Length: 200
Image (cartoon, rainbow, N blue to C red; front, side, top):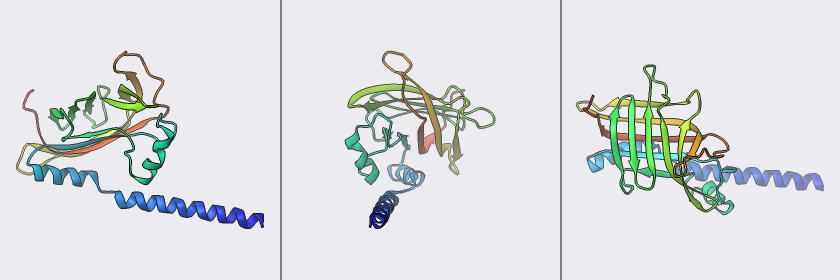
């Protein structure tokens, strides 16, 4: 009898997990495709930047976890071209600068071999335990990730995607090194219609 009960619990948990996965897959839409479509629709630059925080042990409030699992809440902070104060800075095949109000500042640089360079950093606002904070974070050493760019045919506009892991964060207000994140955070995004900078 106890064996049957255990089996039923296991089957129930597997079915619950399968339902959660299906819900997440139904919500999935390739980011690069949506940004490219947005750029063509608005006739200008478009981008999306997402900080993906771990589900657990990330400072997320416990009552927010079900919403993240079911896809009703974001996995972490994000901004795009429609965010207040959104701005495109210097753009080149090896250099990407995006920013917005509230403490957002993304700078990605790559070296001659296309590897993420040390100058790369991401500043962003986040709530931890209900407290609004701002962090300025840098990648692991050696950095992990990529910046892929292509030039649109017949133009000087770049489109592409990026992904990197950040591990070392400082409080953007105090400048003190934070004891967070507890594990690397994935930063990813895509962009389209960004004009190359003409400055040398």
